[in-house]
Length: 305
Image (cartoon, rainbow, N blue to C red; front, side, top):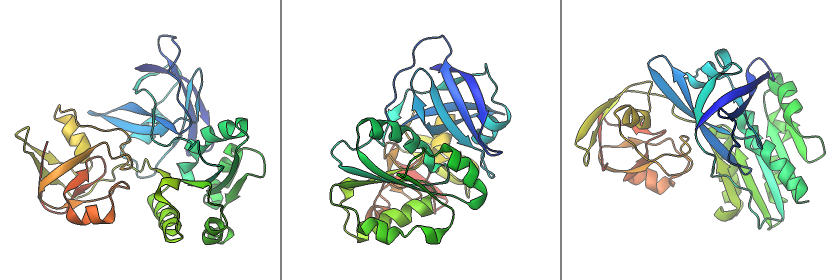
């Protein structure tokens, strides 16, 4: 689907809100709270495919993009080159992080740009008159920008220092009918989820969203058993990107190691896991891997694809 950039609004030096409309003037498909879209971002010699949460999905799609210091290209292009009227290819909305309808209360934990999916949650939760509590963590320097994004009211609390959020106490005092939602950097998410699990939170009441994406690493070779193709994965591309650049159509949805859609069986070699989907025991066996974020510990992998 082709979209047109309708607005580019600077929230801070490193954060921009981008409004997208259908290029042909049609009505965009609705996206429920928690949904994301994929942007095909042009670059020199290649196209980046980045996922962004929809902070609003009415007559237009709104996303918030943070310029990443060590970006592989996508966020930098959106900050430096995205202009009003520019056309860009986007996907239909996909929702892997919906609001649980059975919850009596929703506990939202976010850090940094992980604020974005919850901006779409709040209007719906308030319309449903459902209880929620939102704690957002950020660096002191980023506090003005994130404070401007947080909704007014006592439900949303901004933390700029670690000692102002007593996470164990917060999780312990929640009632059994509360659902937990976590979005942010990997270390933040891992800490929150592991603590909730240790405190006995059921897996069904813990929800996570991650668009961390691939970070690059040592190059390696991959052999595709079914396709009879051998590829070299470069240090600045993901395995998923290498498959796509070879003209293949591997499965994928979030491109952040969270949804499990891109999982492929490993026949030989040892994968280097960076996903949030497989369990620790699955990581140890190495029988499969997420192609969007994971790499190889051995010089070569053989995949059943």
